Image (cartoon, rainbow, N blue to C red):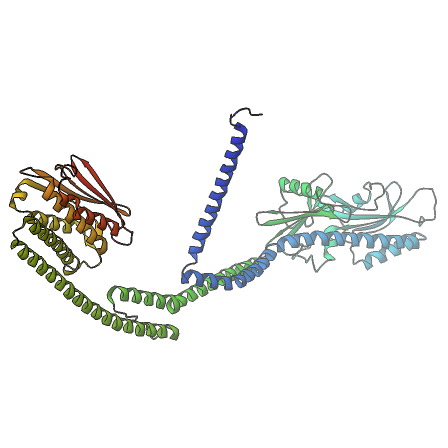
Amino acid sequence: MNSGGAPDARGGSRVMKVVSGEQTAQKRQSFRLRLVFHFARLFDSVRARMATIIIGSVLPVAVLGTVLIWQDYANLSRSSEIRSEDAVREIDRHLRHDAERTTAMLETLSESMVDDESARRLLQLAQSASGMRYCLLAVLDAQGGIAHRLTTTSGSFEACEGGARSVVPPGKFAFIWVDKGRPYLSVRVPLSAAPSGKNDGKQDFLIAIEPLDQTAVAAQSHFPPNGGSAPQLMSNAHAWLVSRDGSLVSFCPDCGWVAPDDATIHRLNQRSSEDVLGRAALQVASRYYAYGPVGGMGMVVVEATRLPQETRTMWVLGIWIVMVLSLLLAGLAGVMIAGHRLVISPLRRLTEAVQEWERTGIFDAAISLAAPQEYRKLAWAFGTATRRLARREQELRKALEHQKVLLGEIHHRVKNNLQIVASLLSLQGSRIRDDDVRLEFMLARGRVRTLETLHRHLYVEGELESLNMSSFLSELSAQLLNAAGHDVQSRITMHLDAGDVVLPPDQATSIALIVSEVVFNALKFAFPGNRHGTISISMTRQKDVVTLIIADDGIGLSASSGNDEREGIGLHLIRGFARQISARLQVDEGDGTRFIVECPVPSSRGAM
């Protein structure tokens, strides 16, 4: 527990973490808003929105067409791979079919042979029926010896007799063996009874051997011959048998096929070990390899390359894709150009015409006849509206000028009347013998002249909405000093610093009367006898507050308290004028007297 008033450090840490989390969340939200705002600005123009609509309309069709063409291209590019895999399946099917057919034939012969003569006739009949397919049809004894009852093709290979004596793996009656780089299919079937009638307790066999390249001739639709005796696999496809020692034996020894390298065979072996059926496919450069078991008797590798017609078709597809993309881009470019000429360009011209009308008052859209009818109507409507506005503006300008002339004339007459009143007061005051009465007349004359000067600055000089206080106070202070006489002018110096303060007429009037009253009283009472001094007037503005300071280094307000005039109507007028403009009045005494007037001024009413 935290005793006394000690702070909880853990609680403060939690508070700091919460505040930091809130700040992080606010920063992320602000970043998202800025991102959305910048993204939205990308689609702020007509051009961007038209492009988005056009691309959004055409893109699905273009994507669908491109996908379909690409699928055809991909299928065509896999044609060699598919052909190699089909070749493996065809070899497997034909080997199984030949082995089963030969086995069935030998089993039939085994049941029909009763003596040597019947055996010889049956073997000759089987060879003739097979189209001289087999290089050897014979009866083998248990030791593998070939009995004299033997029939071979006229062009049989010498290796067939060696193949007949080769050792057969236990339980296998059909197998592939290789001799001098040539593959052979050998099928053995136990003979039911010896043709010679002897029964020595030993099992004899019927054997049939055929070259595998001759076996391939049976599949003419898939293995067409290639000119010579050695047939070729389907176009641009080569096949090799994987022997027991791992070497490759070509199905066409005389074709000069180049066998795959050991690395390719190793990769095919690895992939086949991962497949349930023991098959694998591999692409090396532009060659495709298929690998798999055939006939249950071994593994085969088929190599296929792309056919010339396939290459031409792929080029055609590539050209077609380029043409589709080119036509799509050309169509988009055409639509964008047409949209620019039919939509964007007339809008831009209309916008420039409106901006030019704002600057010069002349509207000239210059929409060509090639522009759409809607834009021509819009330009005509704008032109009609601007002409009407121009006429109305001209009428208002004339009326305003007339009002200004009338207002200037009125205030000019007011100024003249104020001058006449001031002159009458001056003339009347000069005829009065009593000094106090004459002084009152002079005070009244000074106030009237102040108002006359104010009217001249406001209306005669064209400053109807605001008044530059620097020039006005400069003239007013000189006027007050001149009215005091040569004796006062020689003893008292006036300093003025009003900056660039500008006030509206209602506040300028009250400020002018305050300045007039304070300066007049200072000239009259602050420097008695032949006392010299200085009167300073300064005006500053900070934001919406104008500060007026009128100071003198005379004897002070308290020292002249015996003068009823200084505490009489003049000070009451000053306070009244200050209240009229909601100003705060402060009077300080030290080395003289200082009047401080702080007046609030709205931002919309005057400027620095």
